[in-house]
Image (cartoon, rainbow, N blue to C red):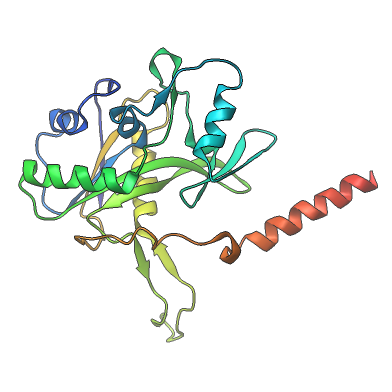
Length: 243
């Protein structure tokens, strides 16, 4: 598998994203996966907000979230089935100091891009992923998750299949699009690299005309980490009372 970051000029708010991609990627091979960072998708959709006062960001976070709670460092929020910091609202690499929100519907945006670019590049199989950086509980550093994708299956399911000793898997599934998102994020960078695009070739993916938007989702009630986190928080509270 080859992951190639694409150096670009600065993308402007409300600019045509398809034209921008064609400008920097004149050719695209059959069976490629195109990774487009969520920030330029949001800018193309005009998903920005002026800083009005000190409470602007908090109001935006609450409005953009399904659930929000302040923590020591950031607001921890639930948005579109994902746990994210501050509803994904960002200030980095923002022209004129605006807040950049997440795209409105990344699945819809990915599907639209795929349709236009398949015709433009003359390919039949094309995957499009719109990722964003995420942290993992109790672990330093960011990775990336797919906020939306099109043209490929996002999950590889091993359940019911045998391991090398013949035992059947009960829970094993691989997040294909999240793994590709992290691979792309590693070479695209998080700072001033100016590489908001990446092309992945020879990826072990299954291309598909339709995607299941819910295949990667787990409800909070069914999440395996919920009892551990709740217990850990309770334990820390008991320790504080003893001090």
